[in-house]
Length: 143
Picture 1 (cartoon, one colour):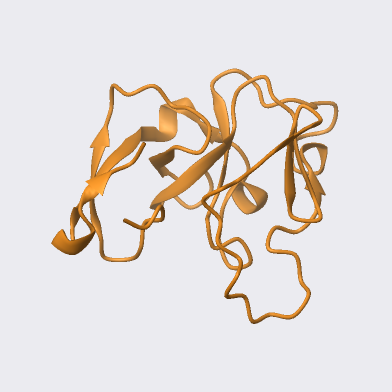
Picture 2 (cartoon, rainbow, N blue to C red; picture 1 turned 90 degrees about the vertical axis):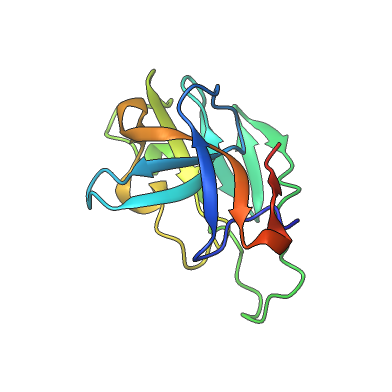
């Protein structure tokens, strides 16, 4: 089973599940109102940054095992461009506030995510994606 969600797949969303780092969430994007699924990278109270394709949470390196960058054809670009959370948040805010999450798409060079529309409010999250139903050959749970 692929650890990613692809277009046209049907998934199960739990409104009761606890949201943790690297979970997929189904939510309404803050600026567009479009429903989408993205992976939670930053939790409330954390500071997030990327440098040379490495995720840092509160200054400590965190490995993203689900990312497969082995088949990249775009030269030497970073899969995830370098950034610091303070570049995305309003001035003076250095951590993700309570009730908000930082989400990224797995296809980082092309994804519309928190780098574009900002943090996602807990109120805008429909739920956590817990299982892929269709296509049947890809059915399975997300852990």
